[in-house]
Image (cartoon, rainbow, N blue to C red; front, side, top):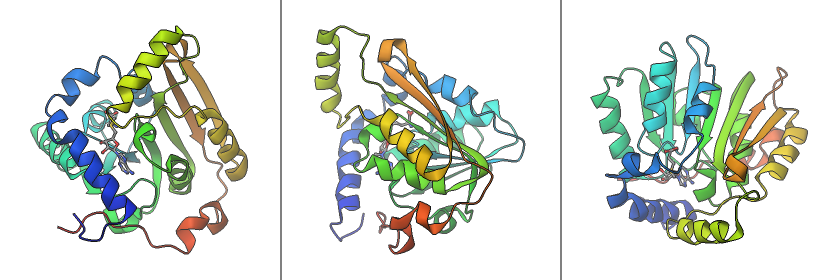
Length: 244
Ligand SMILES: C[S@@+](CC[C@H](N)C(=O)[O-])C[C@H]1O[C@@H](n2cnc3c(N)ncnc32)[C@H](O)[C@@H]1O
């Protein structure tokens, strides 16, 4: 970890703290409440030879499933937590996918995929239950759109507003999620709508399980984006969170 105490380094330390022990039971426990992840993966429809990036890849569970479902794709995973990346790397090796899945440590709000992976744009990018843990998550959405190939798509699944569920359930769920540094992004739909308008992307938005979760797909137009689409990236180098 970097000796410089940047916000990204502090957040990386926070995530490592959350997941140091949790990562060992993560896949077993999260399958019961991180709903919609397999639906997101199925909807990637990743073409042969395409490049697929997950932002906030955690234990690599989704990358392994995507690799199996789309056998001739090249997969990349970025996460801010070295602890989670250790689990992800082990899982990728266990599943014989070392040649197809590449991992890197980085901040999903400000990253340079050329430096991290040697590739500048992706056919598919997905973010699964990570926006709710990322401070400045709106920047992740814009950065992901900017990293898409023309015609590529960004797929998001995360906690929704729980508007169709009993109030007591919503309150308890949010108290419990807060213990893990998770905050459902109630403005997700509005932010995606304004990003779609700004970038010329199309937006599909679906509410799942009475609002428990939201699923979104943004498809970039075939016209190339300009620096104006990612202004914070133009004048600012990506923040480094690794330094060990
Ligand atoms: C709830 S887990 C989701 C993991 C996986 N995507 C899944 O669906 O199982 C959230 C992940 O986001 C990562 N994360 C949080 N903030 C991040 C950031 N700023 N940049 C990159 N990853 C981040 C955490 O370290 C954690 O691995």
